[in-house]
Image (cartoon, rainbow, N blue to C red; front, top):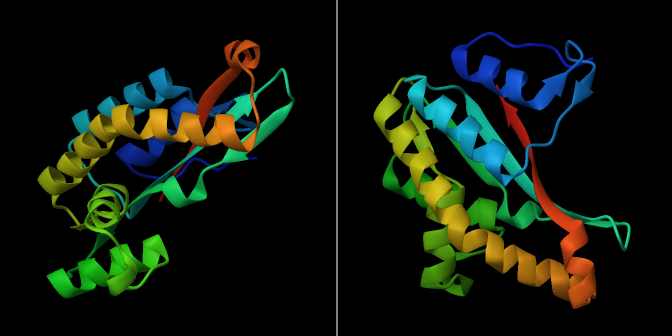
Length: 168
């Protein structure tokens, strides 16, 4: 049983990711994820964290691949500075500064943002950046899935992306 948590964003996530009164979890498709993100943006509120983990399923080859390293994790804190933000991004990338390219760090800024509690504008901006970044991210993830799952062209019609969404 999935418990419905207090708060506007938690209620939106619950509404779009569960069914049968919380007995079962739904994993939204890209279209549904964009609807969820839009509803959260329109809610004009924040939450402790929002985590979105993409995965790809291909029914023909009966395989699934999760992309934990491309998970979106937006955390709200009481306060933080630029140094803490940089350390947070590097921790999430599981890397150290000299080994991270500029492109990786920029991706990390989109996938692992921090905002302050009750800073609705930066929360919304982070979600908008992520929503827009999905247009760049998903083709990259699709290429990874094709390679790792060794998919043939005729297998592609049987695959789709889904997202595990959590909030607190």
